[in-house]
Length: 360
Ligand SMILES: NC(=O)c1ccc[n+]([C@@H]2O[C@H](COP(=O)([O-])OP(=O)(O)OC[C@H]3O[C@@H](n4cnc5c(N)ncnc54)[C@H](O)[C@@H]3O)[C@@H](O)[C@H]2O)c1
Image (cartoon, rainbow, N blue to C red; front, side, top):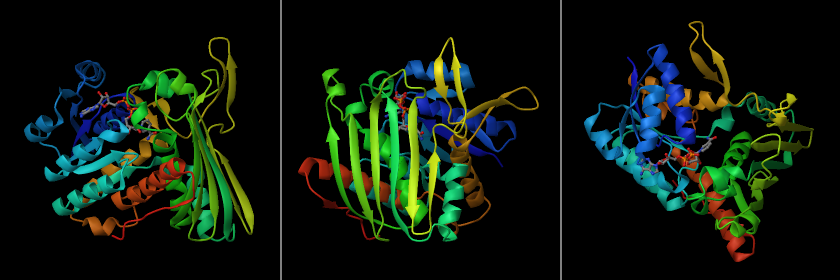
């Protein structure tokens, strides 16, 4: 039985959701039913690319179409209401990161999913990166001993906030858009809760371009296991940087260190047309299947496939509780949001602050 899917938000990353569902439809695992986007131009482009039916109003899509599950790929601050409405319509939900930009918003989403007995999953795809899966195995098997400290960095080129989404960049930040990936990853790797945060932020370059958003945010977070991590995030690297994003993670334990350069996986190129380039070959790789159809592989696809697998599991009679600990849940999305909220609060107040975690 195919999982019937609707996508809400068909912009840059929505395209990645659409292509994942389109290729799962080849084998009959998914039926891509419809796309909702407030922008008719986007609907027309995606209709041409994927043959997908479009709705300008997602509520109309939810009420008119027979859909089992939705994925929400709208701007960071516009996930909450759509997720709650989708949960109230009985749909399983995959939400792009961050789950929401407020802790109370996350709680409302979690409660709505629980009330309606639907799955609420967050697209934290770094958990599917093979290099981080290997690192988690090393941590679980105690190869690194007691984790003492670490450093994560994630930096986009300036075209991301200034050309891709200048309108909603002020509603986001390098912490919300980028840091959240690593806040979740580090907590998930160590299975330890965040305790306190201290952060500084700079508003300079984007502000001078008329975009009221942080250029960069540097945060230090302490965890309950006694470790502390620095998280450097920014989205102002020059457009001439060899990749759209520079990112990686270094972990130091009592028995060893582990470092993942998740941007440069060892492939470096320089061409007349594009200049120097590095490639995150694990993220999204384009290829062809046996029938000559374009297909994509990588952890950017795997985490969306995981959502489909979870819905299939539920449709085969399993309960949501059977999935506990096996997917990026709404509750875990809320922990990452709590970290980002504490980081922004620390910047605003200029002092160390507790990461406030709801009890449930
Ligand atoms: N996992 C990743 O690697 C990754 C990468 C990029 C973006 N994202 C996340 O995906 C989300 C979208 O980012 P993007 O880069 O695709 O942004 P985008 O601006 O390219 O696309 C957002 C789309 O949502 C549509 N939209 C806005 N309000 C809507 C509504 N009420 N109903 C329906 N559609 C609506 C817009 O018209 C637009 O087409 C963000 O939360 C972002 O953080 C994740």
